[in-house]
Amino acid sequence: MEKRKFVNLKKQMSEVELNKFCKKIAEEYANYPAEYARSYFSEKYNVTVSCFYTILKYTVTRNLVEDVVVQKMMKKSILNQNIHKNGAGASSVIKYAILYQKRDKYIAETMQEETVKKIAEDFGSNPNISKADFAASYGISKRAIDYTLQRAILEKIANDEEVKQIEKRSIINSKKEKEEAVIKYFEILKKKREENAKK
Image (cartoon, rainbow, N blue to C red; front, side):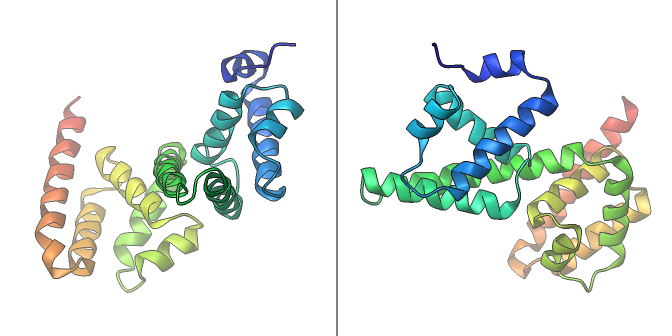
């Protein structure tokens, strides 16, 4: 029987079913010993090797699995790469860094508007809480917070006063050598915010 491609899975399953299926495979991959890799899962679930890798990427970028699972997936990927070629694991680190970035962006983009509003309010009015602690209190990464604040500003979810507070806090908490870049970044954001409001 011909192995299924990811495009076939999307046609055969609803989004809920696809997410559940992909999550199951990713969690198994993360928790099984190193020798259980692409060939094993390709056979077990009747998917192509390319489809298997797409499933892993999909579960990370769509935030379908816990961070601890992603870390296990990355470690296993590095281990398997190093088995085939010594020192090759670096490309897995780069690959997962890109996936993490996409994951953080997806979290911010799909967040409920009221949550975005609350994060913007809380961030601006709590300058004494470090960004790391602030992000941890919401159970997301610092970069996901950055994307969320960006969305709050650009989509006018945060009001003008909240934007001022976010900017002020960001400037105060930036390193001296990065202060100018932060000021410039907010100038660009505020300009885009005004342009978006005119649309």
